Image 1 (cartoon, rainbow, N blue to C red):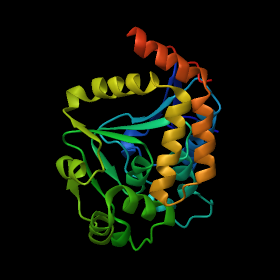
Image 2 (image 1 turned 90 degrees about the vertical axis):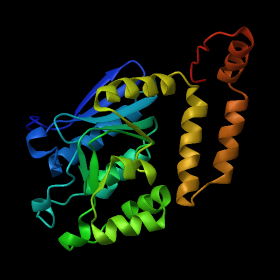
Image 3 (image 1 turned 45 degrees about the vertical axis):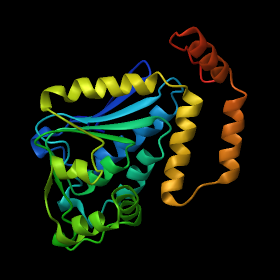
Length: 251
């Protein structure tokens, strides 16, 4: 496989970063990119020490979505499966976005737990304009995260909205100046990576299940019981009483 331009994975301590690397094409995603992206997500899931997964992009734009010219091509592509894998990733996920985010890339961002944007960002979903019917997972993410009215507006009108509106409807969890974007992302990742892993990952998983209407009460009870008997809970209690930073081990 020619790895020029495909997404790149880097791991530093408890934070992993996947970077999209086709800036000349506004980080448009090809079938090869999706395969590499899915493989990176699997790799990160297997690294127990990683608690946070960042999704970033080089260049002016965050991502212009899937390569329109490849839609309906001979090579089978599971865009939905890749985005679903990102939503179900074990670590907490953070999309760090500059410039535009378009088409399927909007769903890629919505699959993340946090979405940081810089002023100047914009988004639109051109599916109806292209004659394309979007897939189930993406429709559900739009409705569960943004609400039905916002989902209809974006899907049915293909209207472009700016950063302020993206923040107002909940697409962005954070909106900062371009100069502050990296610092805000680093601050958030540091906060998340300092949390107790069992509680962090368990609550992320069950909150997402609740949003999808798929909560498994038995699995929730099992995770609560596991955390209640964990060394991390005892460490958290001791650190609180001693007014120090806890040292969590994920057990």
